[in-house]
Length: 480
Ligand code: ADP
Ligand code: LRH
Image 1 (cartoon, helix red, strand yellow):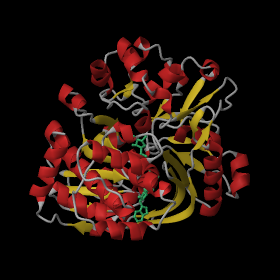
Image 2: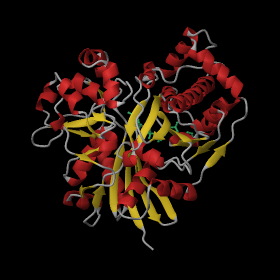
Image 3: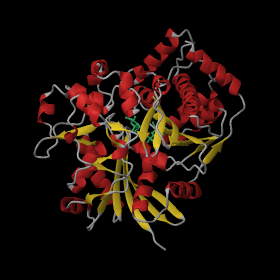
Image 4: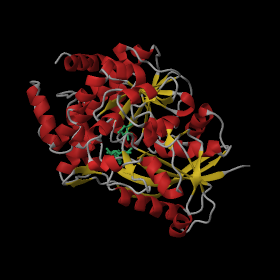
């Protein structure tokens, strides 16, 4: 029977990895070839991604992966590199948590009001949407020299193959794509004086994206030709593709640095109510819409753990499980938590300012974060069902947060729905599956999900039945 081996390059905001997936009719095995830290760097100009370290990690990973049938690249969204007329990278890509977009949205809205932007693109407001980053960059010397813009996975693909393209799922996070036509929003770009020729032509997940360059083959020890296949290059698109749902009535939460909580839909929801609730319509595989809300996610915990000098996470979570539930909660959707630094103090301050008990110990702060995330998960899934008119009877959690049992259990309790947790490496699996599909090894989206459900270890959490308590906490948070 036909089998294939695929390398998935999956770059998250906290770590990058190269995973090797083996796919057959009843097989889906994933092994980690290489994992490396993704450490942003604060330069005098601001917060930057260390793109060369990431590319070096990708090459190390491909060498460790060994011979494969194809390679796919996905990463976090919105960020990009600018290339000059010779195709050389102009500077280090700016981190989406950099402060350069502060106050920029208001200026953009003076030209195109926020409501019109939403009606045209369906994208939630986030200060870091590529559109606002471009508005912030426009007056710089670097931008004056830019002839090309490549989103992070497209930039790495270019370095691997020498070929340029703009993969659609990730392009949908720029706020320059119309989710109905799944093409550029030409009118919007014209009104905002954004030159769409900066972007190379769109690619769809599954499209060929070139062959590894001979220098890359030399450096990695692979024998050519090795094709690179476009995948859902937005990590969240890849993760949603690997949600092991068996029916249609499911919600998902992709948990990692962020929690992305919502639904898979056939058509976008562009209502004013949806905009007010800050739901986004990003694109997924096969023209699907990822209707979801960004929640601050485990970033809140990552930043605290960093401030506390990296204590053992398992022990911290065990202690947090013993702290009484729902003593104090913060709004985990609040963009004020976006910037790095002083997170324990910022969380304590948010509790103090809202007249709640102030968590003091790391265990108490961790408990506050996890209760707050569970509440935000509940609210997002409730709101999404109402706004989209699509009800669910199960919540799938995928991503690194599935390793946090307390978070999964609290989410089941808060939502009052069963939670199915796993796989933890959903983005890498979705990346592998799209390559396997392009190579004719798996069927449609349902077939891909079915294969994940049949082969990957999953954990089910039943809700405790204590929903009244969570409802009350949600109401308290909403009326503060
Ligand atoms: P990203 O792709 O955004 O970098 P991941 O999906 O890799 O994020 O998830 C990283 C998060 O997963 C960490 O911040 C951490 O909170 C959580 N995590 C990872 N391993 C464990 C573990 N063993 N126990 C509990 N949580 C874990
Ligand atoms: C998660 C993610 C998310 C985006 C954010 C910038 O890694 O791609 O979907 O909103 O990073």
